[in-house]
Length: 493
Image (cartoon, rainbow, N blue to C red; front, side, top):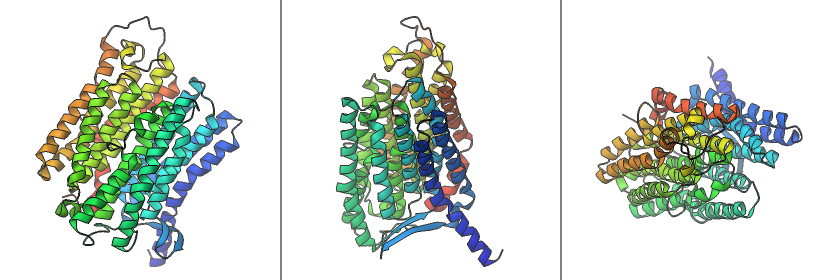
């Protein structure tokens, strides 16, 4: 192949990056155009979702080519750039594959529960996916920050979807905490970084390598991790449980597809490309935040055990599981970072399944509390079977995908010589066992408190949760396909 042909081919591949971000926007416009024709409106979302999934999957064969696309050079040193790298493509793939499945689920949920304002719902859902892909493909700090803020603003109408006082109050907490942390902490961290590094472009090995001392790096790392409020570290976690008033497809979006995964992805991106794993290791700059992550992991897990409301229990579970990924970044070695990256995928598959199940239970049985689930497994075996599979994956047991991310995290903690963190990780898994397994146990083995005269929810609700539960199994047997592309970034042995 000639040099000119190779250049044209690379340019064509690079165009996939802005196209992938644009397709959800086009899907959103289709939703608005067909607002009076529900079937076509929903079809616009599904078609856009399938197209995005195909686009992100098409990028895996060329992920090591360093493709980039410059959107806009605004001022010297200030530009919007998309760049392809394995960590970002992993996040984009999670969002891209789960969007059409979530859309199918949303069709059944929104119709089954006679939800209002469905056009607005599907439009902002598409906008949120576009923002997530923008974040995934960001080539510098400025591009990342813009996408991060768009994601916050585009999901706020989804959190407040019903428009009642409870939703408005939750929306104020959601918007207040996420904007306060990003503008008050994350933005100053970005400016400080750009001054120290004399630029904003993400760099292999870290932009700040050799640019600052330990004290500066320690403060700056804390600013980043607290400023990335979507990672839900204590004490900036309250927005996440508050947002559970939203419809269940929104909860799935928040916990698995876009918002929280954008948060922990940004934590890993900053750790790898801004600070550099080796720099964090040598300087020990991440050590203070390691304890914050450990406290969040255990504290949220203990709170989850006490919650009877199913979605609230799952929300605190998410806070705890996100802390695994943040802890992976603070352990500052390649093995832990790989475990954190893999946990983005394994937790996404497991947690979206759990929320799908919660929505199916509400739609079919109108039950929202754990104490109300006795005997329901006999009437809804597919739903609670999927719940059991996803729970085992999140706990970290074979033969499901979650075992690999938990195993790499344990190895990373051992490699770092952090015996206390080894204990934290193991106790965290025991806590997840305590807050998740009683749910399918009650459903399958306790007698129902009253006669059950219904079966499973509609197929549009059951099929997605079966598919995502199946993904937990696929991630166990196909883990190499996820880990191998990360080698060049994390330099695994």
